[in-house]
Image 1 (cartoon, chains in turn red, green):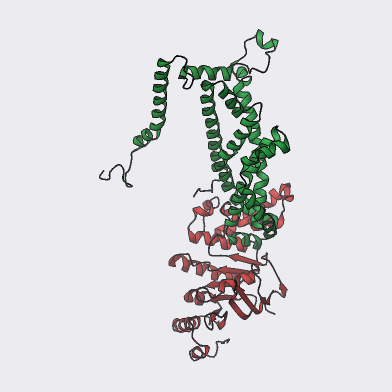
Image 2: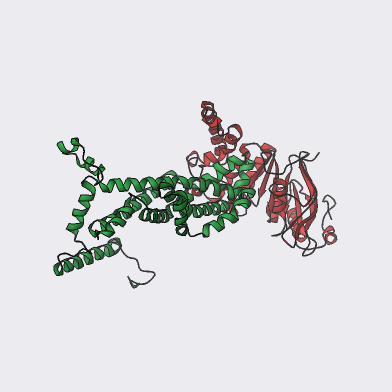
Length: 276
Length: 289
């Protein structure tokens, strides 16, 4: 059974209504690393927000582990492009915030048990921090004092601290410079292999999608004024050789631009599935 | 330096900046003394511009003599009271306490406005319920309500405090509302994914984050608070700094009015400064933009 089941979902915005997604269906299984690719405005962030529960579809349903969720909760971690860290908390407090929230409410925060437990949580958070590649001296800094790459590392650590089964990343590396970005891509692959978290990663960068994902989904509109559909659902061969990769990039870019599916089909080998 | 002193690229040195920033103070004081002396030479009975000596004397009387309304007890007459004791019995201190108390009450009443603004910004139903009304309420000229308040609440403390609350609350409320709306939605979503509930999001994520800005907005509205407070005190009161100023106007008591005005400005400046300092030291992460 799929972990995330998106069933015939449509979304439209505004008045008069402008369709964003039309009849999108996707099944994502536990442990997959799915990259959603598409041009600006194709609704890939909308798709992510639907899975997150921050938005509700006009039609269709979204089930996480066979259950519908109408608001964001602990089952799905979230790392947006920016504003992910709470600016009023130090790095360490940001990482441990999730665990503190879950275990203690306003009343129990004043019990002595809270202070004992908080020390343990902080120790775990500090360990987490070390694995992100930040030094311990950064623990007391505020997010504003960190570089963009460091901030995203802390944001990912913060999201993983509560051990969500699904991690949703919305253009998480798009604001970073190329070197930091490559660094972060390697790190997130490693984390994914270690933790087995299912990751849904939205990006507009084809190379990033190919180097990260085990599966790449391309969203594109059939014609202007239509909602986007799943144009291509492509398992990424592992290991991905260079000549394969350049061919796949061409194919993916063709799909997200407005090429007809049949013209792509000729370029794609039988392993890859085409969804209309 | 090639850039002219009036150009955008001018780089004044440290001493030039200090001298320039104090120049208008010095010029104002000098001009006052010069004019006052000239007027006193012409007319020794001059009352519009008291000399510094007269003002010092007037302020000394206000700050060191027992307030007129209490009869000195036998104790006070027998032993000479200390300076601090005399100050605590003085007219100036009593007026300051009366005004300060009203000021603190009204500040305390701004807190519910902050909470309501937060809820309006965060909870759609609360926003839908209150927003239109508050926007309308904000446009009512508070001073025009003064007669209604005096009729409805009488002329004692309540009506003065209500005036301040009605005058300043909508501004603070709408400010908090806008600040709440300005918090990136990512923050709220993130908090929910970390396991927060509505209460956590409102008070531990959003309020905590906008709090320094709210304090700043209250600080910038101190002047309107004082404006409404003084209006109320001048029209109907039996004590307070503005009452004293209004009372002394009848006697042309400029020797006390001018120091009182400066005293009020100094107090307000100190409150402003301390709020800024508190804000800065409580929220080291906060940068004013």
